[in-house]
Length: 344
Ligand SMILES: C=CC1=C(C)c2cc3[nH]c(cc4nc(cc5[nH]c(cc1n2)c(C)c5CCC(=O)O)C(CCC(=O)O)=C4C)c(C)c3C=C
Ligand SMILES: [Fe+2]
Ligand SMILES: [Fe+2]
Image 1: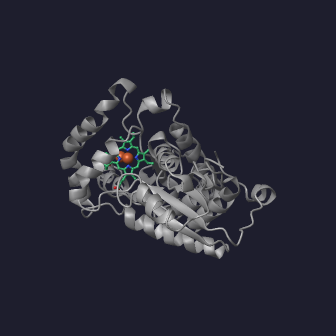
Image 2: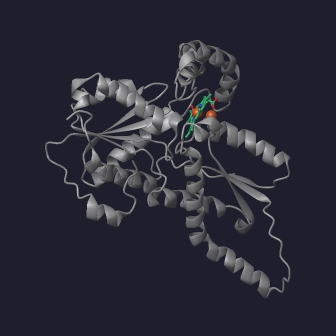
């Protein structure tokens, strides 16, 4: 299911009135991450025990847990070093809590009172805890599931939806709770604009912004997900980059044009555009995490500088950028009318 992207369409189709008796809940879902180095091994075990992360043929399903344990034991030392390099733990819980607070405030500003919960897929506070201990306790009457992944992948949003379904199927109250799931939201204007804004802000820090090559990086998924399991992730990445670049060109082209006109006026007859500066943008995840802070800020940056790239910049993750959070609040409002209970 997609979501309304145009606000006009929203006004026409999604007239939603918030009943006074309704108790709205929004569940923000994220991966979660180890808070200290002792958490790394059990966190990895949870991750690799997920059949949506390591897909085994039916016949070998019984190997899922032992295999998860083995891979985690093998990966833990290196992974611990990576988390140690960013201060000993993942910042995901803190950032996601901040995003939840900001979203609650943005919804209030739209006159929508909602409880915003945080549920992590592989670490505390687990999705299971958020649903069983908080959502049920608060007797929410309508729920929006908002995974903090702009793009859909079987291994992220798909996996979170399956957990939600599993918990809901076992519970009479949850089975009757109307739920709306926002499966992906990378096409939203607010998201694309917020990213384009953050790129422009960083470009302006370069001495010659017009020479900067923008380097988009996204998390990989196994080829078999895309080719055999119908994961839309790769297609969505390509479309997302296209949408960001289209927005950026609309905003930035005049600047480049001005430079070209200026060069022409100065008598330059030939021009070869060589992008010698580079700037990285990770766009498939909206919080700083191990891959931005360690893989990009340390690994890629070192490699780039050693390879002759002179200037390096990195666009920060959106985090609590207000235009982005406001857009998420719009996405929640737009999702409300389509909420449906698993059992009515
Ligand atoms: C949109 C983003 C993500 C996709 C798609 C994704 C798929 C995926 N990941 C692994 C293996 C690991 N993921 C790990 C942590 C981790 N992954 C994401 C995002 C996506 N993963 C996040 C946000 C995090 C948490 C980062 C943090 O700050 O704590 C890890 C552990 C850390 C590391 O070594 O990078 C592993 C391992 C697979 C196998 C996969 C697709 C099948
Ligand atoms: Fe990763
Ligand atoms: Fe991952």
